[in-house]
Image (cartoon, rainbow, N blue to C red):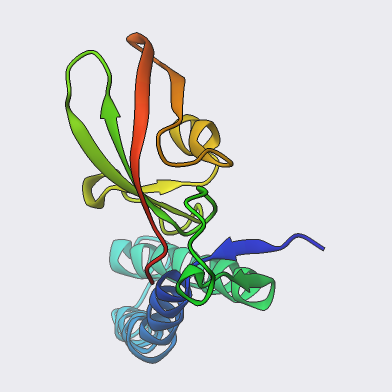
Length: 159
């Protein structure tokens, strides 16, 4: 059985999306299908076919979220003792050794990852390079632009 590691916030977000899909999106699609049926011939009814396609995407996403939530492993690092080690769920500040550019990432599950919010997947190259390291460790991360050397300057165990 596959476990999906996730932060508490990520699991809550997925549950909220699931509720929205089941209680708002699904009924809207059903209403759109019913309305399109009233227009007659379904073979040439673009509204009907579009609504059915939406229904397929919606039901698929509902099944996907249900499956993930049934196998979720919620990891709340705020309840752990901060020993300075980078693990799933930690917020890590690293500095580029060559440019002194600082960046802070939170290591999260695949479904929570959003680089615009500095939430990186535990399976990303950066996170894989950081996991297991401690404050003041230096590491080299392979990027599309080449290898970059970083130093870990802060590790936070916050929710």
